Length: 66
Image (tube, rainbow, N blue to C red; front, side):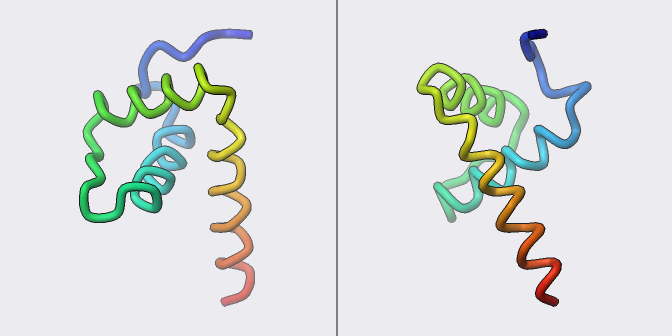
């Protein structure tokens, strides 16, 4: 498996991280690449990348209900 080293070539991952960070940290969320990548590293190291798939599922479900 190829390891992600930055978010420049992963626009979908970056978008999912923005959604995740927004939900988790609300007003204190920071959306610059450095903070988003740090969140990705934290999720990966703590075996919680599935949180991003849950974000995508929720967004798709909300969009479908509209």
